[in-house]
Length: 400
Image (cartoon, rainbow, N blue to C red; front, side):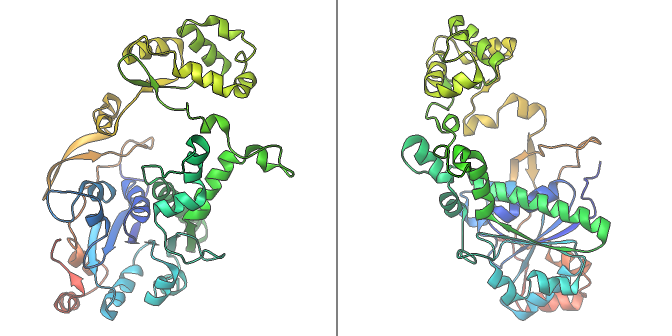
């Protein structure tokens, strides 16, 4: 099966994580993604640890599978001219460079859509183009801090912390892919393109407020902000005899089955725990019971019991053990792949499917500048024009 975005061409002038995650999702579902890199390559090639060769670390491989690499020096007018010629041939232009830099380069939405009215221009920014924070630079941790994500840790444990996972980058990258999908759908109906702005701060702040305003949503407030169940310090994997297990029992049927499983059927009629509302009022005590009741059996034993009793539970995985998870292996989420220059690697499959079956696996991530000549030729540049770009140091072909 070809992907639902088969035939859609994306010019990706983004770097590090948030933009590449967006284009990764589009590529995963069939889009042709042309990754435009500076002569030194995407910062992620150098920021994410060891690889077998320079600029080809594991994180870069995972975020950029299936894309084509075009290395252009955009500090030179000929590089900008080549980029604009290419932009006029694609469906989507994606960038996470700051709006003032877009205007300076002439790749802002107004400039490019004047060349190609059907173009969908998607700009991912830290803080949008309005308000007092507009135009400020941002990385994931900056957004986690200002949006309240780090504040949820302070509310839970007393110390603000960042999630040790680029949660803002990943979340906003997915939102950007969703917005591009919406714009492609509208273009099918109207024939016109779109200028999309996806601000990281506003998106992550919306998530935190939706989750945690709670009683503070009312005017005047009915209570302090924060869902105390979600913020409970006991809301974590539970210790068993030989490790940990992940368990959640929210409905009355699930909670009562959990009480039977741990040998405490009396708790089913305890006025603190008999109903959802009562358990919410006594979250601290309820979570403490859950956290201290599973040490007498192994994780495997508890998994069998909870499965039989229909209590939501799953094994606890470390970062290292996740790649060995039997479910992920069975559904093809983790498979071995031979990279043409980097040798054997683990490839991460597409988690979501359409009814017609899986899209064909995408090829491995590219070396820097590996596809420059072919991409520019397809955009209409002649061999002489391309040769001149190489000679002038505008088109970089040497792999990093």
